[in-house]
Length: 123
Image (cartoon, rainbow, N blue to C red; front, side):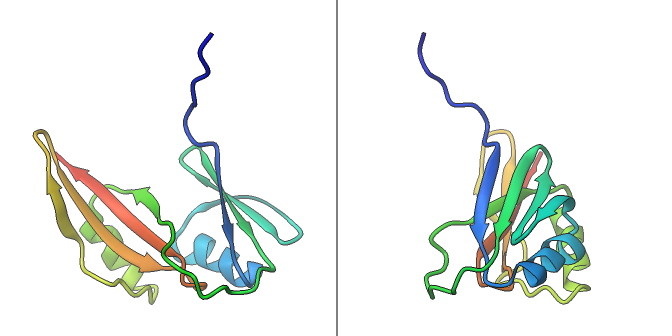
């Protein structure tokens, strides 16, 4: 039997202040909270669990990774998040034209400077 990887079950993200990070991901980005245990806050991202692990000193190293969130109507989502004081590095923009869709993205940072992206596959 060949071992096969399944879909990602959880992503861990180190944050300096778990309370601030929890508010940002819950209140600003609107992710569904699952539970909190000490310095760990868990969110549901459409079946993939995001774990914010608090208490880490900022390393100054950023953009070594990026979490991409699928969205519908990227322009409307960006406008809603801007109304919540989220700063975007660039407006939603076309990244690639595929045979059956266009890939659009917009990039932002969380309070610890971690890179996040919104992505929409427009058909």
